[in-house]
Length: 317
Ligand code: TXA
Ligand code: MG
Image 1 (cartoon, helix red, strand yellow):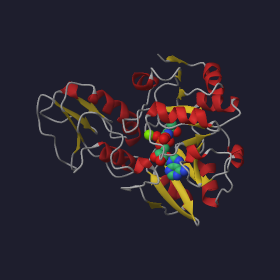
Image 2 (cartoon, protein in one colour):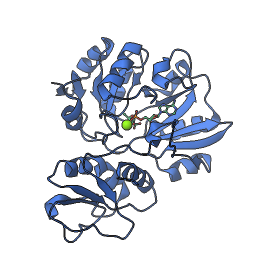
Image 3 (tube, protein in one colour):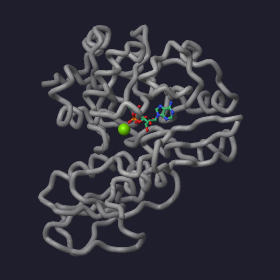
Image 4 (cartoon, protein in one colour):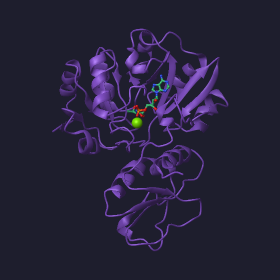
């Protein structure tokens, strides 16, 4: 069983020996391994039960180290990095050969970010390699926002989980790529579109793909609980019943037991809602309910990314 703790020296020792460990970030917990060691990267895929076509994000602690991994940093990427790193933003940049094929699933670009968590930044500074880290959940399930979430699902396969408290942002990083100077968002996430556009102007958003997705966060079914989740149309209420669960934005729904409901933010704060989203979904999934209804969030700020997660987590035609 995994040990939980706050000792980064233990995490460092495991990582240097080629093992994988759970690490905190401001978005979600990651399952980290030496990004330059193909065996460690293989272990990540195996532990997560993740298909090899789904590339990993490389985490580092300083902008100056980027040159080791990428051949070019377009102007807009540079502006975004300066504005938002460390933070919930991942940049797709042309990779150097130092990055193993396995990390990028053979793609010519590598996904990189500097996460904003003091413990993980300290850990990264103490290592002489970057960390490949997907979200620390079995492939397709809800992402973990606490060390305990990681232990619950991957505890028997990971020797150590660095406990940095609950994730402050709560949804994965926004992923953005640059083609011929055109910026495209491939995954909506913890960095709001409005903030990105305030720095580099209008970007296109391409987060849907049915086959051969560029980013499997783009797969239509992802982030899913075990119980069927029904995303309500805006303004609609769930079918009442004794074995119904509900995820509400500000106020509970009528006709459903209070203990079978979770409220994302009583004050209607989207930042607070994002922070609670995955933990509340997990809690509902573990209750004696047969179905979970979710209320859509307003389409602004982090609401876009949350609606995206709920859509993919939901039962679809
Ligand atoms: O917030 C986050 O990004 C978290 C924390 C741990 O940093 N990580 C995370 O990783 O969400 P993961 O593996 O669950 O999602 C990474 C996404 C996947 O959808 C993957 O397909 C995409 O990033 N991705 C990675 N490398 C890519 C590349 N070279 N080109 C396109 N998409 C890429
Ligand atoms: Mg993930």
